[in-house]
Image 1 (cartoon, rainbow, N blue to C red):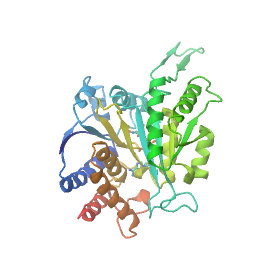
Image 2: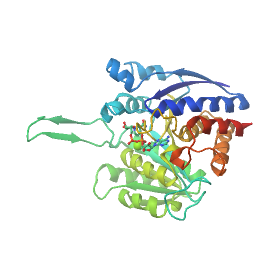
Image 3: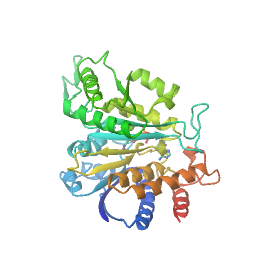
Image 4: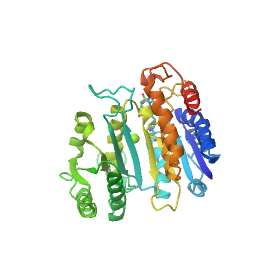
Length: 352
Ligand code: NAI
Ligand code: MG
């Protein structure tokens, strides 16, 4: 099989981790009879600084014919974050209808969690984040700039269709996993959108009697991600809450450098996009020490979505083996002193 993959390495360590991961994806492809044909798009902050936009006007349409998109990260210290995010990532997620963002959190054997007493295998959950609306809706405005009565309105949008889509994906995942779904909202304070959300979870739960549903307010959920992460199986949350919780999910599993994600177009009309959860990490960019594993594991999610579970399994197996090996190279975020390339070279050896 041959697949067309759009690459957007982006900014900072995004370039490092995407470049480093490609030989590994190719090597796995070779073994499974899969060819990945890449088209690279040099979009991002450098383009913005030179030409005034993160990507061309027809950027999203140029991505559309591909089978999948692999993105590194975007973000630049000299450009406001809302400009970079709204110039590239958000339009892609929205216009390619990637309604569901899936972010697993796994504490691998050999990785130290900042949580006392947790060992490999103790943490293993997946967050389903609503990905095209909610608090990230482009609805609002600013008035009377510079005056004392200056105001800003930022509205959240919850549609029945958007909410049902992510909630259903979460129920399906729970059914495949341990049969437990945690619904995270803040319906005590946000009595319109989040109450609709809760109602939809209750309605859909009738279709999934085999899935146990737990309800948590987001503040309690943030606490419980730290207090009892072992209790979570599948978590479903709005765009903003899912974003915040998955940073907690990444760090309790050892590092931002280990957390992968998938932005899924569930109706299949457009490509899905795979990216590490982390950003462009300007504090370590250009040093060759970024952890590539979040991107490699995003590559495994990409193979899964292409319908190539054997390739995905191979990638996850070598990552698992490497992390469990105390003598294997590690990047500094995992307490080691190796660089990105050494980690990938070791993974390539393990594929043999
Ligand atoms: P960040 O994720 O870039 O970095 C947070 C911390 O984690 C830093 O100390 C960084 O060195 C470390 N880190 C992240 N990824 C790592 C890796 N692969 N290996 C080793 N260490 C790693 O988040 P931050 O600093 O808040 O944002 C930096 C820029 O990235 C901002 O411009 C922000 O807007 C952007 N950003 C972009 C995202 C994306 O493209 N999906 C997501 C989050 C932030
Ligand atoms: Mg985030």
